[in-house]
Image (cartoon, rainbow, N blue to C red; front, side, top):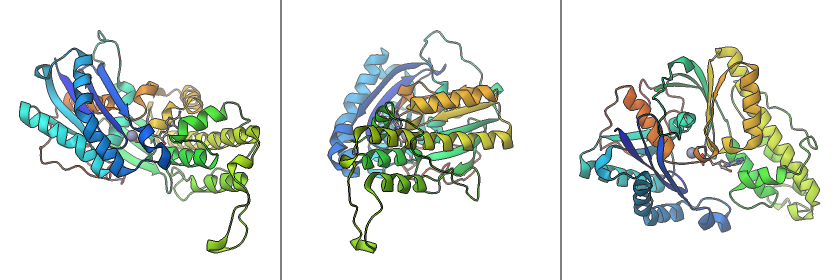
Length: 365
Ligand code: KG4
Ligand code: ZN
């Protein structure tokens, strides 16, 4: 059996998973650090890497025991090698290299963004057949997370071409900041979604940004508009300007309306960009991934768009949207299917994704 054990530690989740060659997930363990970072309102890199160090071995052991397999049954080790916080990445990458070296196993160095893109191919039925993905290409791919908002044309699992990206904040980052403006705790995205449920999404209108590349994204204008709605227009100039109120001064119903309106605007921008890209590239399928895809409003709109345009929608279960190691193992399995034998143990961890930079490598790691 071609089981791959994968490790993921690029940000604030310590994760390990075991996935077989049919992309069936045998084990998926995620130790989240949200509680460690909450009082700071965002991820503190030094705290994150120390927590990874404490958790990495128990998380790997738990994944192996959940899968019912020992290391002797594993035939490859994969890890997210980039992008991410470098101190965090180094913990998972070092653990993966150590395991691969000690056991003499192939080492798969995986791009986290590419792994998010193909997480929708993961499955949970053990008896499922290995299915071909060829009929799905060419496809569009969208990754929307806390660190990335990128739109790709995908010719195959190793051929992704960047056609649009955010020129300022990632969608998840903007949702997190909007949540913070509204007085919600970290992580903001899911809390904003909860508050938005009781609000009127038409209470505040946001314009769709018109950019030089119509497939690019911009969230900064939305954020400024929300800030002024929540806190009022600042009085005074420059460093001495002050806001006259805080989120706590708003009625609860108004906060819910603003949350719903902001979420609606972010989702509308994502759907608009995919629609434009579908007109241009005539894809057969739409692959989506990243933490924001756990959002129910976005999932509903993606499904409606895919149905309207007869696109196969390849969307992960919510548990495989946010950072996890199953997607890393799954992408390593796809590369292996294409004949990939693994990477050099000297491959370094990197803070930035070559995919997100818009490079068009022949072979995406
Ligand atoms: O993929 P991910 O776990 O980490 C990165 O690679 O960045 O994505 C995390 C992002 C955060 O910004 C988080 O607020 C957002 O995904 N997110 C959500 C939801 N769940 C997570 N945003 C909106 N609605 C959600 N339900
Ligand atoms: Zn991610």
